[in-house]
Length: 217
Ligand SMILES: Cc1cc2nc3c(=O)[nH]c(=O)nc-3n(C[C@H](O)[C@H](O)[C@H](O)COP(=O)(O)O)c2cc1C
Image 1: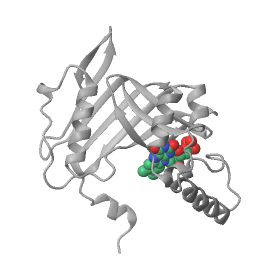
Image 2: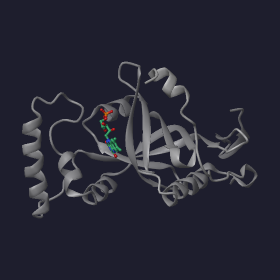
Image 3: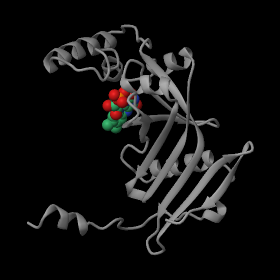
Image 4: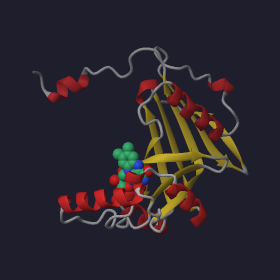
């Protein structure tokens, strides 16, 4: 078997058909295009098309990133939900600037969003929390997110008990749950093509509207 380095070098980037990206027909604002690409990823059968990497500025000034699930894309921005007692919410409260990165490998596309977060109301958090499956609700209520956990077996015991309680009709709680909207300042769309290199189209917020430009890949 050759070295890892050698094996990595020969992996082809994208194989098979890729959807076209007619940049000349791109809309004047980026969020409708993000919705279009998300729907195309769903249609193409991408696994977890709504998974996104959220990057924040950590409390010590470093970078921090983790995967989240996108809940919706509205006229304002991109919504995600999280527990409020973990590292990321402490970071967002200190520095509300974030980046989101979508990568849909099956269609050779990436979208990068930069912007600010807005915390939505408790009512929005409650509606989202109660729509979650029992196991997600249970996981969202135990312990303190991102804190060290002394015993895996104790967690599993509490998790099972909590799932059981919720499935028997126990009340959902949104106490530790919040929904945030990422309000974009810039969004860049990246697409691979079979034989014409890559396409990058960047939107920047300007004067209440958006500017659009192609970037060198
Ligand atoms: C596919 C996937 C989806 C996830 N979805 C969420 C989510 O919607 N909300 C969330 O808070 N964490 C989600 N997580 C867990 C986070 O990646 C992370 O481990 C957790 O939120 C703690 O992050 P923090 O320490 O930066 O606060 C998901 C992880 C994966 C792999």
